[in-house]
Image (cartoon, helix red, strand yellow):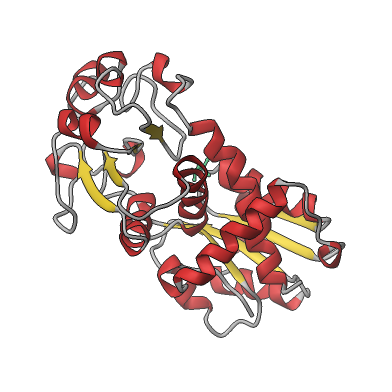
Length: 289
Ligand code: CP
């Protein structure tokens, strides 16, 4: 049973084989054995990209999908999270995709006999986002070893940052952080935004997660962007082949100005495209077909 809970559970070779499979799907590969299998998508937190790229991936594999709406479910009558997921297992679902606000929610589900695909757990991990980030970086540079990446912004609340710190270091990348000190963590070296734009191969911006902040953001958009965001002035300081990434959704004006979103160095929409292929690979792996 091949769940995907956290990339740190996977050997480097297994991560590479998921990326290779994703590239085969991008090139048009099909998966006849996935036809008709039932996959349920349980999103307890809002999502556009992850939720609908999982649905797209499942449909392209020929699976049948169930999209759970917590607001219209028996959870409103007091049913627990565990009992809800157990219900889908009992109905013979072949794999269950879950996003939940609690870090490591999946530890409650260890007894279940159905693959769980983690679509994001609180501020903990976002393994499929990191896989699509790795796919995008490898397409660009053809390697990971020796590349310099700065992950910039609200580090403390970012499951994307937490998963990418671990996996990028394992792949031999030099990992740095930048952004407001109050949202930083001391597990990764901190550099200034101006140094980051001059020296990095990958500038990975993170969303200011207003909904997770304990107190309201005190800076205006312009103040935040001037200190920690990408804009035309900083774009001109980047290395020749460096790229800009962002898991999205993004706050236009804060992490990046409008003219950065679709600039030639931006890979933001390429990341979204790759998300479908990575999720096809992950669902196929879970279905063991
Ligand atoms: N990147 C990401 O997880 O986006 P969603 O929250 O829209 O799924």
